[in-house]
Image (cartoon, rainbow, N blue to C red; front, side):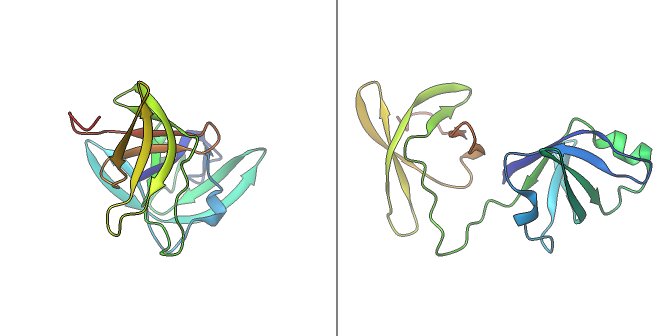
Length: 156
């Protein structure tokens, strides 16, 4: 899953929330749930309404029906499934790769191995191949061209 928005604050008394986002939320499939983590568990919500508001969005989510409900999710991150359409391939060339909060290098290309795409990453003057598996991806920030990973020890 990828972080797609951050709940900034409640908006109105009907459960609306103001969120910031690095993706165009209108492009999400509203028939698919988004998730907010509570006590380590991914709780699904459906977006009922999404209105742009000055570079941010006002969202209404199912089961968030009051000001108190909205204030309970203020400050939380909204996640969505990271599945890509079959014909859509990510291009992280030139992106900065971060692992466990530390910059490890810059992506120089993609090796499209069927069922196991890998990134070429320049690490300390050498090029290494890092698997691009959805379980390793913590977040992607297209605006800053940064990919945050959580890689197992020894991969680079």
